[in-house]
Length: 90
Length: 294
Image (cartoon, rainbow over all chains, first blue to last red; front, side, top):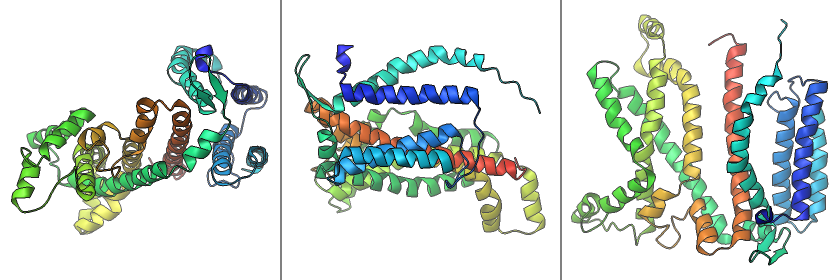
């Protein structure tokens, strides 16, 4: 695996993504998602909202890293908050 | 309605998943790993954190390439979509003429990208190329290796030549699927040709047009071989698009860290646009079903 040049932060990142996917699978088995319409202009399932949230998180991080001098942890906090809002009301 | 869900069928997707893991997921993870490090060799690497991303996002050359890329994609869409609809409308509808025209129109689609680049490179040469020589005889100072404007016009012309047939074919198939009854009703109403186009043909074409726009946008956003062969990104960097900037950085200069960061940004932009288009298509179909139409 050394050719993949793993680092601790990227390992944590991918573990978190994998854990989210596994968690979503379990959640889906325990209580299947119902498609609904929230404040987003389209009706979404739980997985759709997670995807939108992750994509938003990526762009929030890029914006903070590239064009502000704010800490990346702030970007992470903002992304998580936005993800929660999306999952609940999106 | 009691639907039985049997999720064991998902196991059949497993071989494909393994294949995708090796062809896409593992390489993508590696790119992410590279993007946060400066890898100098097997055992010499340094963690750089977000530095490459910061550099790439603020690189004026890349920002210029990104802007050029968007201008290019929008320009070819603005030309190819109306032109494709127009061609589809005047194509013969039946008989041997229909087959002949279809074959003629499809020909450019069968030519590999770099061959298209070579064809146009020779075609536009001032000394031996038909177009380049002809324009010079007319007194126009046409030179794609010196004038950025000429290079741009030629690349757009080349892309229009290569890919308008795809839009035309999609529209043609969309037009063929409109039932004759619609046209009969229009004739009874003495609808003008424009009214038939505006209220029958165009609405019925919406779905194929969304697919055409999606395909053409993605394709043109990732364009590489054609401009690379035709102009090599020049003159200067006036026709250097994103994928060529990336190749120069990754393969030419071996700057693996920065190019990995840049790849991820590029990938995210494409992912975002694809998702928006995909959702738009799916929603349009859903709306149609909820209205009870086909």
